[in-house]
Figure 1 (cartoon, rainbow, N blue to C red):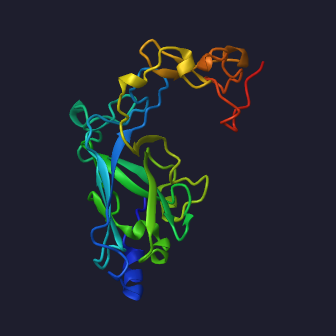
Figure 2: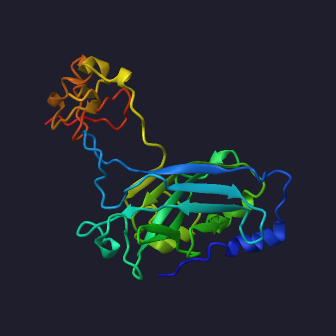
Figure 3: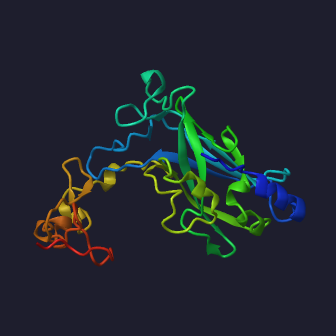
Length: 275
């Protein structure tokens, strides 16, 4: 597999354009917590995918940079305690929890999708994909062998955003890309083979709990959900439209979206499953 040099484009661009302190600020920083993606809709909050973070504390830190070769920005990925036990996953080093990737034989080709906005528009959902590997439960970028990289992953786009406002909407962490080399084509196009792996972690928070807002009946929930005995609203299960007759205490929506009820008023993809 050919892995691109993450700073090649940035080095050339930096030499031609230069980096000014006039608009970027050394104190600027984005720091986002990384949390597991919950694939379940019931009270089981475990991640269905074999890759998961066993402990809190993983994060991504983005800062502007004025150092030649950094391409105007640095990203640091602090992602540890990644778990992927066999047989579902590739296996933990020494079968120890949170030690995904055997020492000397790491899990490769995983992708951090970056959703960015600049020049007055979204550059595309998951504008760029940055390859990383996992060894003994810790992630490092493929291009640098470290948990830090410069802005070269933006490719030619990096020169367009020098000294411009650059926003980040989300960071998503995917299993291996079907074509890692496609991550070199920035911005990514819809249907790309760089970020086509399953998402198992994302920038966000673990939602808190407020006992005063627990449901006591279906009427406390949206039309597509019912009140669980634990006091939380859960999607109403269904196989056909007729099953969606409880949600929200108003008889539901009468529309089944496959496995759970949906609402055509809020979900344009809700087509129903009438036999």
